[in-house]
Length: 143
Image 1 (spheres, rainbow, N blue to C red):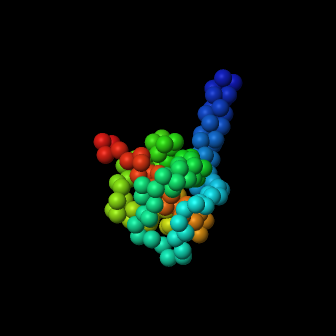
Image 2: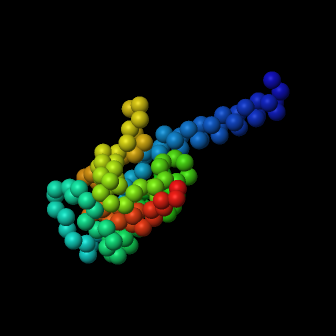
Image 3: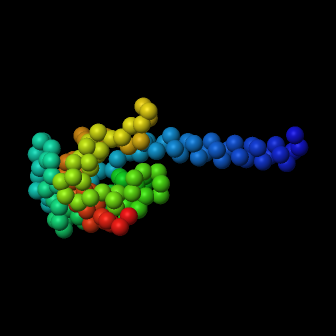
């Protein structure tokens, strides 16, 4: 093997290792605190429907919370770069609320590998529903 071939192989190996560590680190993001003051407190029992749908303050808080906690995987403005689902496809209303609620509370695992951590107990119910309120503003039925 020539020196040039060896150097190219080492460079390719380094790039592969770097890319694979990013994939494995996907779930290793420290959740950022969300200040949900000003929103109606929701209590301990999880709501089945988004109580903040259309609430301007919740949408504002949700946009910030999304950028801090979700955009790394789901993309800025909910436009996925391919790592995680494009959340602009998440329907508004009870059906979308059910899917969203299940996913944010339980996370997502495939073949024993976590792809999304569970956020229940990490972020408040108020913060999670505020994110959902913002996501409803991003819905695009044409995707």
